[in-house]
Image (tube, rainbow, N blue to C red; front, side):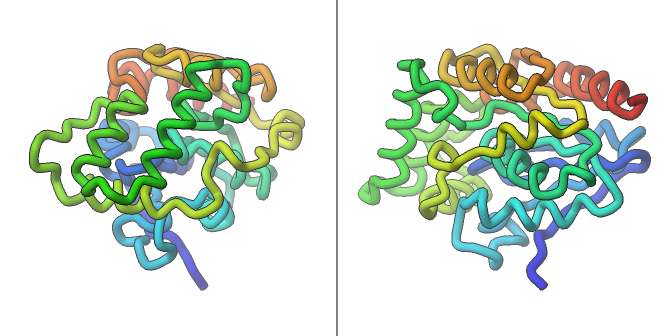
Length: 251
C-alpha cells in the first residue's frame, strides 16, 4: 500500500503537519519541533518530496489528500501550510470523523478571491512559473520566492533540498490548488474547530484567507514576521496555534 513518509516527534495529542510547495516537511516545520513537549507531531513529507519522492512525480494535492487522510487514524489535529493547506482541506473532508481541528495557513486557493486583482495576478504569475521550462531550477526558485513572498534564503547557490523542492513544484500536474473544487460546504458543516492564518504581507493571501474563513466559519488570525512561510515565525506562530489546539481539546 502506498504511504507517505512522516517524521514523528514528541508526545501528547497528535498533530499532523502538512507542508506546501518547495519547502518540504523538516524545512517548513523546523520551528514547531518545540511543540513536541506537549504534542505528538507527525511531520508529513508529501508525494514528490524527500523520502516520499517515489510516490508521485511532483505537486498534486489530489494525490496527497487520501494519503494524508490515512495518517489521521485515531484522531488528530490537522495543520496545513500553503498548498499543504489545500491538501489538508481535501483530507479533512474525506475523514471528518478523524479530525479534531483544522488549521489552514495561506493556501493558494485563488479561486476563492476572483474579485481580488492581487490574487488573480499571483495565480497568473505561478501559472507562468510552472509552465516556463526555459529557466534553470535556481532561477525558478528565486522567482517562486519573489512571487509568494517566502522568507526562504535562496542565495546564489541554493541548497539541494530547495532545488529538489522547486523541481517538484515544476512537475505540477492538472491538480493545481487554484483549479480544484474545494469541499467548503462539507468542511463548514463539520463539527471540528477551524482556524485560518495569514502573514499580513500580501493582499493576495489576505483576500484568500478572509474569504476562506468566512466560508468555513473559522477563526481568523494574523502571524507576522515570516511572510508567506508563517510557521517560521516560531514562537508567535506556535503560541497562536497552541491556543487554538488547547481550546479544541477542551471541546
